[in-house]
Image 1 (cartoon, rainbow, N blue to C red):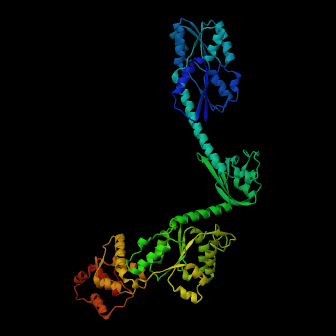
Image 2 (cartoon, rainbow, N blue to C red):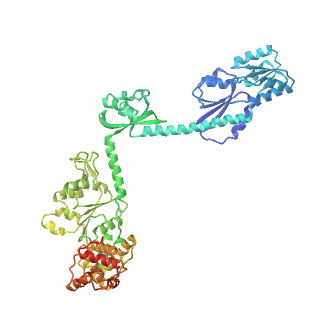
Image 3 (cartoon, rainbow, N blue to C red):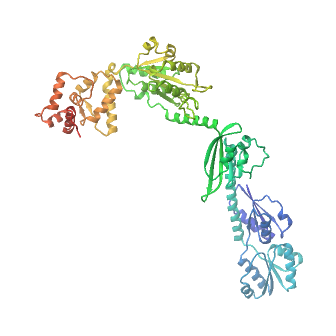
Length: 622
C-alpha cells in the first residue's frame, strides 16, 4: 500500500481537490489523504509515514528539505494564474500591488504593470515568519493590495489587510495527482518485485549473498545466518563477504566479484559448492550473487532429475492391437497375456529369437494398472557382468574406478512403481542372479558402494530364447530365481508353427515399409505366398519383416511371384533346386534371350534385371 498525502495550502481549494480525487480511477493499493497546513509549522518535519507528498510553495520547499529521500510533488501555479490575480486587482481599482511569490522569478514585470495599469512590487517569501515580515514591509512601501498564495493570504486575513488569492486551477491539481499516482504505481510494482525477491531469497534451500562491486555484503538470506552460525543481531550488511568465514579458500574466492568462478570447499563441517556470479549494468560490474549449496543435496537432486527424465523417455511403445496374427496359437497367447496384465505377478516369456517377446512385454505393461508408470528394458546378454550390475542396481559416487562423480541411479529405481523388462534373462551371470533374487525377495535395492537400501515396487517381466529349464537342470541358472520369475509364463510359438499368419504379417509389413519409402506396395502371387509358407523362418517374425523390407527396396513391380523372389535372392540361406539353378543361370548368362521380355515377365525394369545379373556374375553396377 502506497500512501499519498496532499497538503492543502488554503481551505478554499479543498472542494476542488476532492472533486479531482473522486474522478480518479480506484486503486486498491493506493490511499490518498488531505490535510490543511498553514505556512511551514514545525510539525511538517515530523516522521510522516506517507510515501508521496503533494504541496505548494514554501510548504513544498520545507518538505523537500526535511525529507530528501521521499518523493515530493510540487503543486505549481503558472503565469496565467498570477495574471488572473493581478487582473482582479485592476478590476477593483488598485494601483500599487505587492506580489508575494516563493521561488518564482518574474521576467516580464514591466509588461504586467502595463497590463494592470499599476505599480507591482514582487517579494520573495520563504516561510511563515518571512512572509509576515514581507507583508509588513509591503505596507510600509505603500502597497494597496497584497497578492499571494495560502500562507500570505492567511497572514493578511489575521491582520485585516486586503488581499487577492493566487488560485490553483483544476488542471494543475490533476497534473500533480497524475504524477503522484504514476509514482505510486511504480512504487507498488517495485515493492512487489522486492517482496518476491526477498521471499525467494529467504525460502531458498541455497545460501545467497548479494554484494556490491567492492565485495561488500548488501543482503544475505537465512541460510547464510544459520550455516555460518551468525546471530540474528549480527549486522553483516556492509561487511566484506570474505570476512564471513576464516577459510582462506573462501576469502580468495569471494574477494573477486568481477569474475565468475566456482569451487567446492569445506565450510562449517560440510562440503559446499560455492558459485560467484557477477551482475552488470551497462557492461560495468555492479556487484555479485554468491550462491552456496550443500554437495549432498546437489547429488540427491540430480538423481531425482535423472529419474524424472528417464521416466519421461522410458515408455512401452506397443499394445495388444499391434500384435498381428489370426492363428489359434497367437490369439490364445494374447488372451493369456491380457489376463496376466491385470495382476502384479512376475511373468516369464519364452520364445525363439524374433517371435515378438518384447512386443508382448510392452503390451502387458500398457494394459496393466502400471501403464502410466515407467517401463524400463535391458538386454541382459548385451553387457558384461560388472556393467550389467551397475546398470541394474546403480552405484554411489566413487564406488569403483571410472565411476561417475555424481553416482548413478539403477534401473530398478528408475522402474519404481512400473515394470522392468529383463530380456535374455537366461544369459545373466550366475553370480548376479543371486543379487537379483535378493532384490525380488526383499523388494529393496542397494547401490554398489552404498550401505543404504531403497525400497522398490517393480513388476518384473523376463524373456529368454533358450531352454531355461535345461539351464536349471545343468546348474547354469538358479532354480530359486527361475521359480521367482516364472510365476506366470507365456510360450510364443515360432512362425513356422503358425503359417496361417504369414500372409497377414507380410501384407502389413510391406504396406507400412512401402508407405514410409514412398514406393509401390507389392502383392504376392499364390506361388510366392506358398514359397513364404514353406520357408524355415529361423528368425521368425523379425526375419519376415527384414525380407519384406528387402523386397520393397529391390523390386520395382507391384507384383511379386516365386521367380521374382528367386531372382532377387530373397531367401539367402535357402538352397535352390537343380531346376531353379538352371532357370536362374539362364536368366543371368544367356546372350540370346530378349532382356526386355524377361524383365516384363518378372515385373521389373530392364535396369534392375541388368543390375542383378551383374551382381551374380561378380561384376559391379557402378
